[in-house]
Image 1 (cartoon, rainbow, N blue to C red):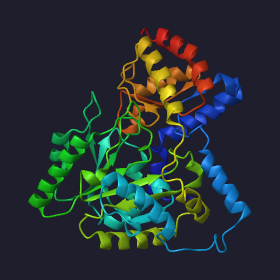
Image 2 (image 1 turned 120 degrees about the vertical axis):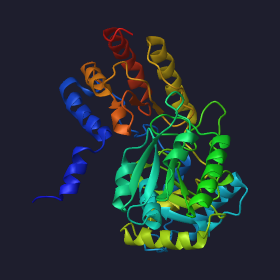
Image 3 (image 1 turned 180 degrees about the horizontal axis):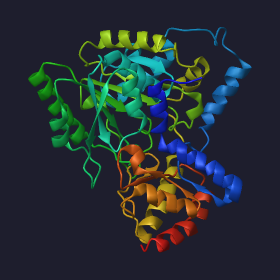
Image 4 (image 1 turned 180 degrees about the vertical axis):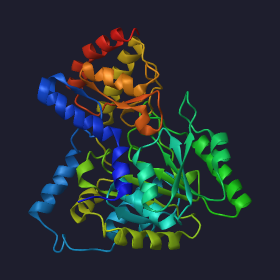
Length: 395
């Protein structure tokens, strides 16, 4: 049966992450899993916090009557209130359950927000390097992605470039901090400057521009850094996030969207988001997962495990001659490719059984991504392969 022409074309240019992950399956079958060093996918190897398992046992032993039935499309009131309580503490604002919609992960939340905001042909600025699915999500809802590079040396916001990209059609900008793929955290001063710029543009063009802050890595920050609350920097802002990374629950597809209570027409936005959550077919976030995360809004996986992996790889690879920005959070490194053609470099790395994702997959040719959320033993075994690769390339 033929599929839609548009979908066929999308598949052909779709995620490099998945392509390289599938290449890993081929190499593992040929050489053995212990001899393949897979840095392709952000699939946490750490286990969820002990509190989650305790909660799961409690629910199994003492099930709540009706716990598997439908609830409000926005999610359980108790869960939304728990989310709002933490956001209120972080921002100092009166965030409450009415500003929260529980969603099927951050991807679900992004689609709900974009569906709620976009008219056909309106533009959404995405900051390069960017998570590749952004373009498909925007297209899902008739929007037009506009790629704007961050600073190519630091990957911090380039406000002049953003300013130049804003038009009368600009409806939103997606900000991802800590960033996938760079690990960079945008400081509060930069976010406040972005807010000031957007207010000026709204006044100039007479429209509304919403900042969509994609934050699944917000609790994974190192070296005493904190990820600023977007609500303290920009009024017209919506947080989209999930517990895939901070609680190591990617397969459970549980997340939420949260609207700044100071957002223009916030009640109307939430009403639209609840409607879209239902009509996009999500209906509601998974009931059991909502129950599990209600009491875990201040819990997290062991961040020190990720920091140790970052430090080991960053220190050794920079010693070998690879150049990169040291990430402040998340679990990715984004070095410059030793070859101008990042796809060629990634292909050469495969010969050393090192699986990477080319920067081209994130709109950033000339770089490559390393996901260091894998087992420490695998990372340690990979170091000799990295040394051989560096030697082969003359680093």
